[in-house]
Length: 306
Image (tube, rainbow, N blue to C red; front, top):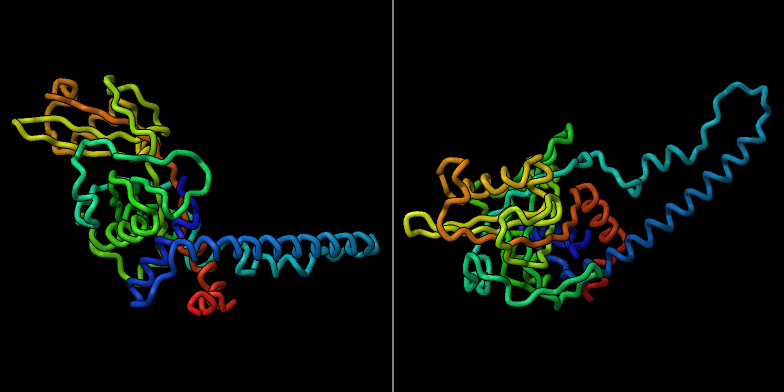
């Protein structure tokens, strides 16, 4: 399944590209993230112990003292860079993923047809290895100061990729080559949220309504005037938009280029539908920035270069 380190790696690839520096590898990011998590939890445990000790000491203060007791550690916790928040970017709300297919980001993706099933898929919810291959999508959103989330780029592939190569390729392609948007600039980094979706369990279905909102993504193909059209929605789209199954199908066909009557969507020629599942992880810039600063300040990036 997609993990937070996958999103961290996408931020690493994009920022290093914009800053003209060498990015960490996915394996390095995953190793460092484990260390960072252990460090953060250790700091939290120490702070909790201090709070308990100071609270116990405060309980012994004379009851006649009307001055409100406030443990000194509270302000340190609220101002700590490890508190899980950052003033540079608000915590995001749920985001919409309206993906585009890209067939030029890598050689292998150009070989897949619009409607063919991936040749091989890995399943399971355990942590993935760099050697496992997945179809995948990378989504970039912008988050306003009020928490409003807007799509900024989303591109992926149904051709399985090793994660290091696939995430690097599509993190950059979604950020810089989604033709619906201008390329993401360095100044936009603090506003970004990254989402990674690894796709699994592809199943052709004979009934276009045989899928569950919030669980399945859809990939459709149909023919109009001897031309084949196709499009896809990731599993979170229908739920976030509040659509019914039929509304989702109609929207998906409109996205593909169909302009017929909504009541006639079932009558298109050779309608094929594949449902699939996607395991998504998300991360916003503030969280990535705290991790990256910890890597630099602790000297761990220099250790990896040795």
